[in-house]
Image 1 (tube, rainbow, N blue to C red):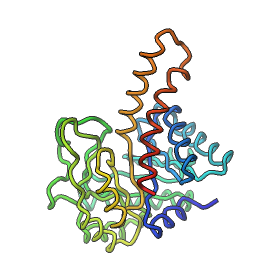
Image 2: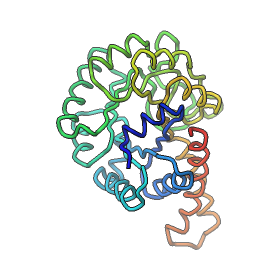
Image 3: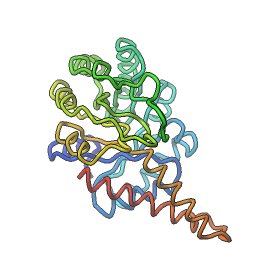
Image 4: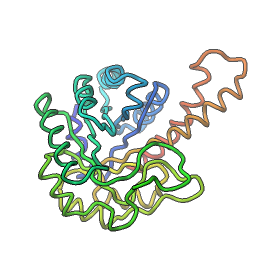
Length: 286
């Protein structure tokens, strides 16, 4: 089976993107895996610090690893938005395939210093674990928003600059880069997502020459996704849309099964709703 690095490289060469989906419990993991299996495409599972805290880091990594080994299927797990060195160490010990150290809100020099420390530590423990760095503030939290998150990079002058991206990548040695290119975490309640800066993606990719990761993909248009992939995005993160679908399915499951006590019967509707979203996104990205 190909490694995660090989799969990402292959995706970039083919002009497609690997879907990355966050999970906090097993019904969502089941939905993501079943959708990827139906399409026969690789997939990355993500757990934020909060999601890992709920599910358990070692337990999450073990579940994904068991699916990969039993089904001989390319499913991997990423420690998404890991903010502290202690959490990085926990992810390494748990057996994660990739780790995003998120210093996006830090000044460039401090982001470089901390990210470089993370890269050196991770590679000293397991050189096969991919390390991703984040450059630029794209907000946080998979929620339905009424306004832009405070401090998020929206104006062109606040987005990631190609020359800063190159400096960051050279200084830290990261395997993957998540830039701020008009993407925002979460979804807006009554407004469309900001358009992605496709030319900026293209310029950053040309400068750094490593795979780029698009965070905050929930709510972006299909047109933007296709253009972003063509410009150099190799991994796309989806979380909020899964949460919306899960809740919609759960509410229907409870409404239609008022006397039911078996969780797996109620959750079947939630799994079905999440599967629809994941299947549609994976088809689009591939």
